[in-house]
Length: 262
Length: 303
Image 1 (spheres, rainbow over the protein chains, first blue to last red):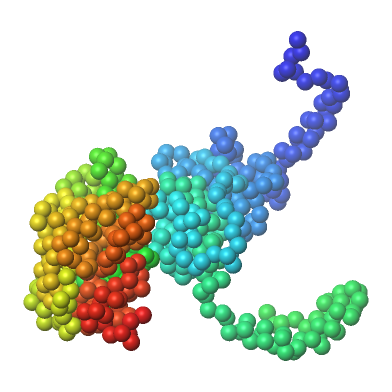
Image 2: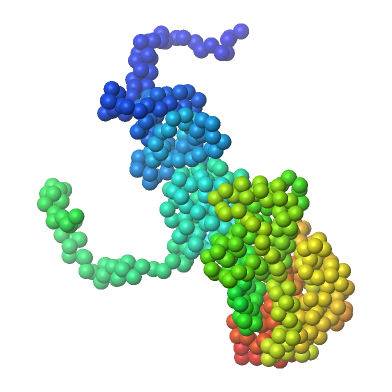
């Protein structure tokens, strides 16, 4: 009887090579921390394991300092992309908190876990085939009607948006308010993770903004004017000039371009 | 007079005609209905379960907005909250009663909503019909320029305006408030013995047939008594009694459709207000031929 649990060892394992790779992978990624100069240290717990880290790091850099290497769940590092969602709870506190790892400083006794991906319902649709009507929101996201106005989504939002208010605006068919209130959403998914009614707020808002943009929001005057200018051939000559240059000439032109004053 | 006003989601979507007509009528009566800022869902259905407090968070949060309106000076010391939709009225009022009678529940809900100020329990949820009654039907009569003479109307109440008794705005067995209003507008009131019979409520989603059967009975009783139209105050009753006439017609080919109005639409007509406020195009059964026949709207203005 073959032992299913044991894999055959046809190739001889190069243990040293494996250990070197592990050591390489768990090396500190953050550079420039001069440990002897760090005055304050805190203990954070990543997925249950404790690490001593310098107190002035963000969750993201602290985890990298501790040896974690992010290949998912990290992006712009500037608080804009919404990739590094984090859930944490501080020792002795009942409250489960949320934040973006790149924007939140570590605190002593933080127990945290990364949420690199939110399993969320995201139907596909062609915006041109949809009616500009509240029914469209309910057709794609019927769970909207389950909102109990508990405001948990708002409390979870790292962007400080009034998430519940825009969900309620969606229910009322107020597309303008939905679009305006959700405008700064970075789609981190934390609202949807916390919602007891299992609403996917940020996808609802995206559909709302698309509908509002497609069917309602006023066309910007300057854009209309510029499109007319393009149609009338205002930029044809310049365009032709640019397209006729070689790559090298273009690179030189770019280097010598007149810059706008800062 | 400025009074806090709670519209509810349906008045912003399917029942816009209920809101436009009510706001126009209120204005004519010197009442400015001030929409609650940041209002949320009323809760839709009052939760009967003892320990299910989460479903009372939505209604109580709305009542906190009334407090805020008073503090912000949007209204002057008016803690009434006027509703139009019977369902919103019922849910908001019943939740209010519940937390006022159960201080532990109120404390839990206040604690849960720690980002809001506490609900102090001083809001009174009322229905627009009650506000009209307070103003007095005499005042209504004074404002009628286009009396609904010769129009035979059977008021329909459904359940949410009347039950349970401590929530209802009128005698749960023999309600008269709509009849009094319609009389003041000059209409002939027809009593429908089925005025309180359930319209089928949310069964309309699961089983159209159940609802169209109930609606058929309610409408036929009204017609048999001589009614030419129905009035009501609930968007769900409206859907079941008005739009479900399509299914009734499929089942009973000889059934003649009967128009159904929000009571505020008939008030706007009786007050001779701008017909944009009537919103008749949102009524499923087109009431225009009936109104033209009674000379209540002009042909060139009919949409």
